[in-house]
Picture (cartoon, rainbow, N blue to C red):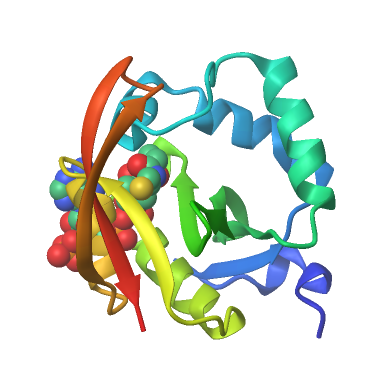
Length: 169
Ligand SMILES: CC(C)(COP(=O)(O)OP(=O)(O)OC[C@H]1O[C@@H](n2cnc3c(N)ncnc32)[C@H](O)[C@@H]1OP(=O)(O)O)[C@@H](O)C(=O)NCCC(=O)NCCS
């Protein structure tokens, strides 16, 4: 069955599912991505994550880009966030963003496990601010290992931030 055809009533309690992104998901993604605590945590964000026009224009582009694979994460059928594979600094990489009300429920860990069955590219990389411990745990629980370190200007904090580069072989 196509994941888009999963009906709301088919979701069991605490279920995590991935499906293709629908345009109607975008307002919820915007709310999730413009949360100040989440912006600080992620650190490496777009220039102004609170600008809805920039957000919509960015998403219109990436939804048409065949080199980017994005899925909506559903928790009990609700839009919990999104997960994507894209090229970052020339390397196939993963990223994810979950709405605050869904944090700490194991949603991202499980979403990444499912996503890794869809994305066969290896090695796969992820960049994480050194103080983003939740994201580091998500990666480590999915067999990503620390590969190197880097630092760069983080728009979400307005300063330089140190990060780990993780690798999944
Ligand atoms: C980071 C983020 C993805 C974590 O998602 P989540 O669904 O809450 O993560 P999980 O519930 O799967 O938790 C995975 C592990 O991290 C731990 N964890 C989660 N948030 C944590 C935090 N803020 N500090 C420390 N540990 C944390 C959990 O306890 C769990 O560890 P355990 O299994 O050893 O108990 C989520 O907070 C988020 O989207 N933040 C904003 C955007 C962002 O930072 N994206 C990633 C950019 S690299």
